[in-house]
Amino acid sequence: MKHALIVGASGDIGIETAKQLAAQGWSLYLHYNQQNEKITELITKLHAKYPKQDFLSFSFDMSTATNLDKFLENIFELDTIIFAQGTTTYKLLVQTTKEEIQHLWSMQVAVPIEIIKALQEKLAKSTHGRIIFVGSVYGAVGSAMEVSYSMVKGAQTAFANAYAKEVASLGITVNVVAPGAVDTHMNQFLAKNERQAITDDIPTGKFATPADIAFWIVQLTNQDAGYMTGQTIYVDGGWLK
Ligand SMILES: NC(=O)c1ccc[n+]([C@@H]2O[C@H](COP(=O)([O-])OP(=O)(O)OC[C@H]3O[C@@H](n4cnc5c(N)ncnc54)[C@H](OP(=O)(O)O)[C@@H]3O)[C@@H](O)[C@H]2O)c1
Image (cartoon, helix red, strand yellow):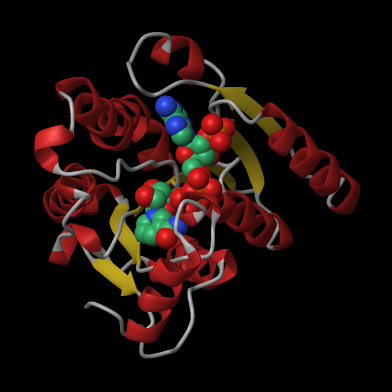
C-alpha cells in the first residue's frame, strides 16, 4: 500500500487531495495546525469508505521547527509528501513586520525543507518518491500587497528546480503545482467586487475549485509520472502564466 503525508490536510486543497488519493487506495498521514475538527470529520468519512487503509492525523505549528522531531516520529513508510499548507499577508511590504515575513518563510520554505531532509531516506526507499509543493502563480509573476507571499512561493519553485537534480537518481521527483485563484477559505477575505474583478480577468471565467488543483497533484503522485521533475505546473485557468 502506498503512503502519503499531506501537510495542511485541513485546508480546502489538502482535504480534496486527501479524498482523491484515498479513492486511489493510498494510506494517509494527515497534518493540520489548528483545525482538529476538520481532520476528525475527514478521517471519519475516509475510514467509513476505505476501512482497509490507514488515516492518521498529527498537529504541528510550522511557524517554528520546535517539536519537528516529535512530528517526524509519527511517519513510517512513505512514498509521497504534499505541502498544501500556506497563508498570506495582504498589505504593503513597508507595513509587513519582520515577524510576519519570518512566519511565511518558516511555514512554507524553511520547515518544509527540514521535513524533506529528515524524510529523504524514506522516500528513496520507495523507489518512486514524490515531493509536491502547492505553490502559486504569484511565485512567477509577483503580486503587489503580497510581496512576501510571492517571495516564498518563488522560493518553493527555485528549491524544486535545484533539489530535483540532487535526488533524481534516488527515484524522487520534486515539483510544484502552482494555482491561480482557487475558491477556498484563503480567499474569503475578498470583497464581492474584488472577487468579481479577478473573475473577469480569468480567461476560463471562474475561480478554480480545490478539485481542479488536487487533480494535478494526484497526477504527479502516479508511479508513471517519474520523468516529470523540477517543474512548476501553473493551474490558473490561463489567468497570469
Ligand atoms: N486559495 C487560493 O487561491 C490559492 C492560490 C494559490 C496558491 N494557494 C496555495 O494553496 C495552498 C493551500 O491553500 P488553501 O487555499 O487550501 O488554504 P486553506 O484552506 O486556508 O488551508 C491552509 C492550510 O495551511 C495550514 N496552516 C496554516 N497555518 C499553519 C501553520 N502555522 N503551520 C502549519 N500549517 C498551517 C492550515 O492548517 P489549520 O487550518 O489546521 O490551521 C490549513 O491546512 C497554500 O500553500 C496556498 O498558498 C492557494
